[in-house]
Image 1 (tube, one colour):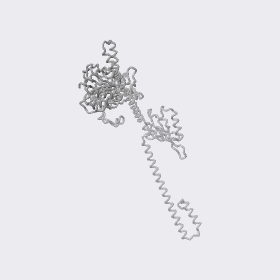
Image 2: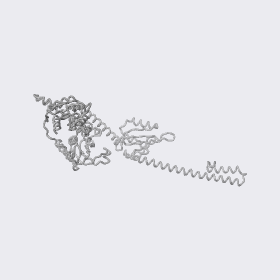
Image 3: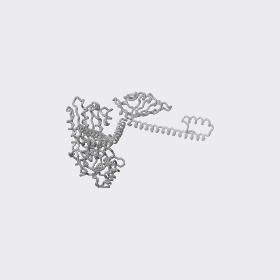
Image 4: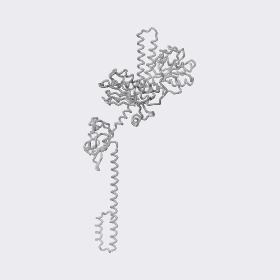
Length: 566
């Protein structure tokens, strides 16, 4: 019981006890005093222990508070603490890093210093009503930095409560999500481009079939005797328009990375310098064109024609951009090497290559604003006036670069010009160079050999059967791979060559070709297609040729002749 008493209470209790027991003997009183003394000592030690425990708790709490403060001070997210009325009492260093405002700039003010015009005032009213009710608010804002620039932010605002349940403070944690938004936009753009590519690849086969039928029938019509000259010219116009449309589809297929490409080892300096020299002949004389080569002989794997077209388009676009420049309009092409570093990998991802050829096409022209720059690689998007651009140039460039396992980027500011950056993976030097194109005659005629022609398009089947007969061959024809396989079995000893479409119902050309090769390893096969499917063809088929639709009669006649007599 004595342990529960204070020192004062203990003394008073002892005096009362003494007065109540005046008649006790001396030894009894001494014994009582002894026990009271022991109790007093126990009480003293209890007080000392309790004080030590309090000091330990204070030390622990102080350590915890220091740890929490250090965590807040070292966070990458901005932390703002305000009083109940919204006046700022504390900001951490990340707040200053993100916004540009120092602690002295904002303490004592309210967070409206960060307000931009991007949100409706009702948005802030709803925010304040939410936290005033004691609820947590989460959302996104467009805030303004000290320099006036805007940035997207994700924010959480939480009320802090007193013991009686009233709100004492608000704490806001904010994160700058500019990088995150940029990555999301790039991802969505890639998805959109991939969807467009799939759409283009899907329609190309049918469209090119139609063009092939038109060109074949125009060719046949021209060969008829006694046609008026005016009619012949119109038929030639039809042919020309057919192949012009075919080139447009080829550009779209290149954008969709489904085009036919002749990938060989290329020395890039001479290729890009050649494009620059050609451009000098085409652009205005007041535009200064400069070529800066900072590398020795460097090789890539690529299609020379497509990459040449890429460079021509970029240079021509740059020249168009400097049309309105009064003083010293200039375009500069710089070629150097780039070894991928952390910044490059964070932007484009890691690569297994030996580094990249970096080509920069710069101009001092009108520049591109932020709103426009996100659309420039979209098909049919153009800022040029009607009649000066199809909107396919940059889309074709985008597809071509991607099909070469490369990357393309652009940096620009209105009034300060633009720079397009191309990155193409480097390979070791190779002796394999593109073959020279041999001169060809108008058509190559046969010697009544039998050709099996297989295509599911009736117009192409009819037109090409007649064309092949006109080229002095016998023809067997059908509309799918299964029928073609049966005809081949029946006329095995007669057929000198098989010409088949790739994509057909019932049985595709590659499937039929593989079985024919099993029957006769020496069978000669030409596959034709509206777009490049060579990466999907089984190597065991070992087809002799793959021709892209629409093809000229000269091309198909030369290929048939060369394949039969090779």
